[in-house]
Amino acid sequence: MESHSTIEQHKNNKGYYTTPLNSIPGMKPMNKYESWFSGRMPEYIWIAIILDFYGREEGLRKIAYINKFIFQTAPEIVIPRLSTIIKLSEEKQRAIYNYIKTITTNEIFTELTVFLTHEKAPVFSECFYTNYEIIAARCEALIKTINKLKSQGSVLTNDTRFCVIGYFNLAGKIHVQPHEGELLVKYQSMNTESLEYEMAASMIRNIEGLILMTIEHPDEKYLNMFWECISMMTDCKVFVCDFGESKSLKAFNQKVYELLQYLRELYVNAYPLDKKLEIFTGIITYSYKRLKEVDEHNLYTSISGRSCVRSLIENFILSKYLITFENEKPEIWEDFEYYGLGQIKKYVLAERQNNAREEESHVAYKYLDILLNEFTMEEFTDIDARGYFDQTNIRKKSELVGEKDLYKLYYDYDSQYDHCLWGAIRESSMLKCDNSAHQYHLVPDIEDEQKLKTIYYDCIYVMKKMVAFYSTQIEIPEKLVKNITEYKDD
Image (cartoon, rainbow, N blue to C red; front, top):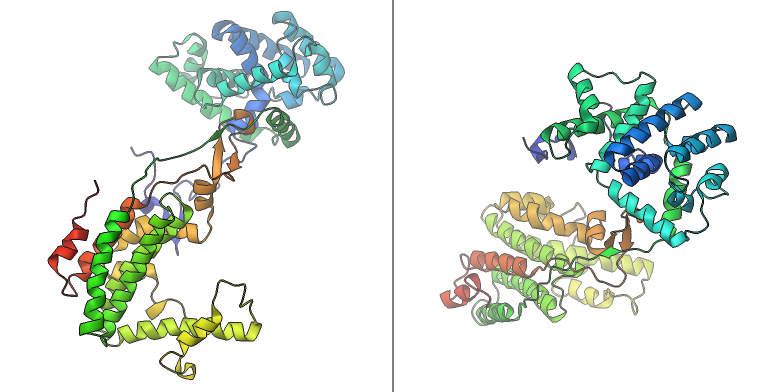
């Protein structure tokens, strides 16, 4: 059985793909406050501290006694959440805390007084605070406990959840099948390395998760206080990715340059009025300049590098599209040029109307004005604002020319970088904090430490495809073609 659903298993509604789980009515993922690590673990951490201190066998026994005492003392408590216990009357709190100290130690919850201070939980703090343990030591102990509970499947996590179920069962609210009941009864004595334990632990995790549906909403105030307090007491520990590639396109670019020298001579000296050759050489020259920029400015592992790959792919697909439909649309080459001039006109007219910052802007409007009127007066140039050239977007063009995978696997991915989508931001500009006290949050990479996977191989791959395709349309010396299509780095 596959662990992940395929794209075909998602429900497609006009381009919006819904996962199989989200297609189930009423199904939704847990929010932050309902999740184990962020929402439930801080509530049950007191249980884990006792289990961890005394070990599994003795710890489970002591928690069973404590659960029974809490249930008898404060039957209004549905589940033994710490946020609920510290809101009990002072009398009930003292009774519970004194009982816990009687069967454990006076210092058992010292680490919790880091955030359950006298101001926020006066009775708890009075009962468990010790003045001989410094804040740093208490904070370190608390972080260690949190780290032991971060895994959904750790023994300590499973045992903690088992104790929560045990309390819930005191009210007779747990109803399971006979064989499941037998597993729960035997759980405490199971070998944690056995298959039987894994089955019981999985069942316990499911039951504890279902309990959420029967109790009141999470105490967001308590949870925010918990995380805010401990996060402020520790520093970020950022995790940086560096794929470590350092190969250069310099040698490959030289091969492309030699090919371009030939194409330029062919165009200038033999076919100076050939519109197809003009546009072909223009597209591959533009692609070559993108490759040069990658190498000269070391953009291999950069955000800008992804834009270069996207451009190379679009150039290739567009070239193939023009060739594929030139017989069906004899004027396609002129149409492509005319469409581009129309786009220039759109910017020039906008500048004339709005008086753009000509001297400061990177858009050279005066130069564009010259290009617009280079061969034809602009009054004879229409503007096509209906979308993409030939009213066919790049995705559709890729399908029409047999390059769907090139679009799906690379171009679409690189597009998120040009459009500033969160996937691109997360991958390139946000570092992972490996500090459980910070809930493994994200840290802005303002020092530019994150190095993305190199685009070196993709640049060569796409340019090889482009040259191989061009060689079927234009007579190019075999040596120049092979220098590129059979290129291998050292």
